[in-house]
Image (cartoon, rainbow, N blue to C red; front, side, top):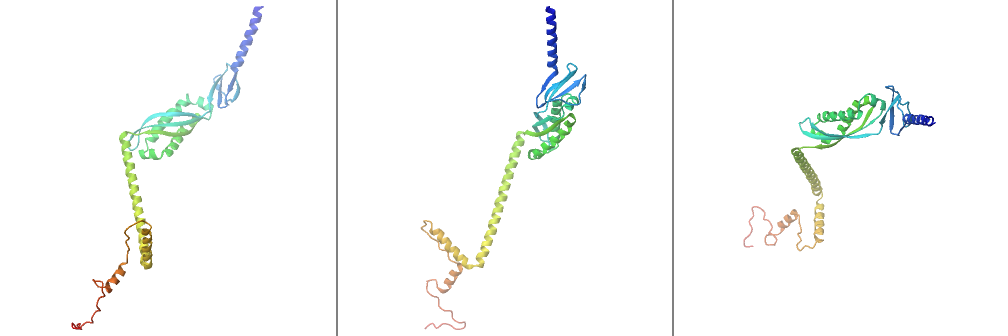
Length: 272
């Protein structure tokens, strides 16, 4: 009687265990690659409930989320023979779960190794100035090269970003000196352009004053008004040079009127 009860219980337990092994739940970002007797099924399964025939079928879960991986600092020698340490960040995701499993042993390790070698090769072909100033262009080139390598594996490299560039101390000082010299050059050019524009405006003003003599007098009066607004004890009144010359012709050194000029060949009568 006891054996008749235990045997059905064992059968029910094994049946429940088999059903538990056959049922698999895939999340929204997961896909299942199913191998039946060693051969992969063509269509990947998921998300949701995935039924397999255990133990005939074996299942491998693959995540389709974007993976962020930081490339360790790499020793780079640029084209102008500058030694650097550069690290970057790679963003990639699986687009075809079946190919990512059967085409490469470990797709993540393969992407990491390809990213390191591509970073060294690409940055070694450029000069230091291009590495510092054209980082977006280098990021796009790295992304294109990596995507070509990983496309047969069913992996898509979405983005590559050069994160940090470590320069030697002597190179940092040289770049700082170069930047300072460049700023001084720009400051001198701006000052020279300002002087040139100011001189051009002064020349235009002089031409206007030369054509309109009355403008000089108006400018003198405006200057007096500006001086009068301030509390000054001394006022300088400017007079035109031609006016002073005309006054000097009419008055002598003592302030009196100069005698009239005698006609030539006729001497003045000393006795009157």
